[in-house]
Length: 154
Image (tube, rainbow, N blue to C red; front, side, top):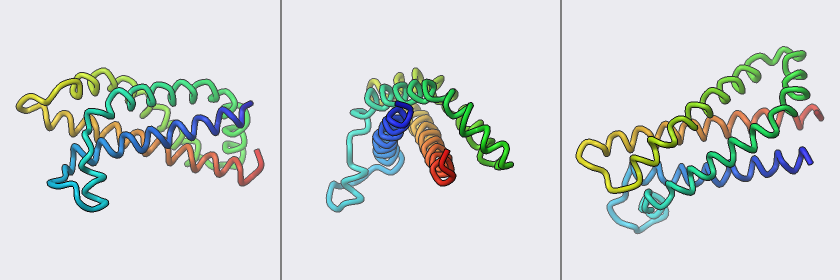
């Protein structure tokens, strides 16, 4: 059951990663036209991703909190005994970033619920890029720690 939950957590994280990356690219680097692969990637309507990104962020964080005791007991104990302090520390930082991201979600929703007013465009870009950074950091750290766990057969 734990393996299933870890895989589901990873799949939700991948979907969230795609959604927040599309939205961040569309708001920070808008496309002038929709021709070409890169331009069509940036030409999406960023506001369509808001509610899905919020739901995915909450679902991924909730599932992560459900499987957290497994990490705390088995994986983290091994990492500490192996003196892989950078891996342990990066996960601790990930926890803090995710908590900050959860706190930012109401402001994120408020910025994206209607077209931006004058001066709010920069706030929309900044909050979206911060959430994108948090999601990318969380995904990469989780992926690396899962690989360490799998490499040593934990």
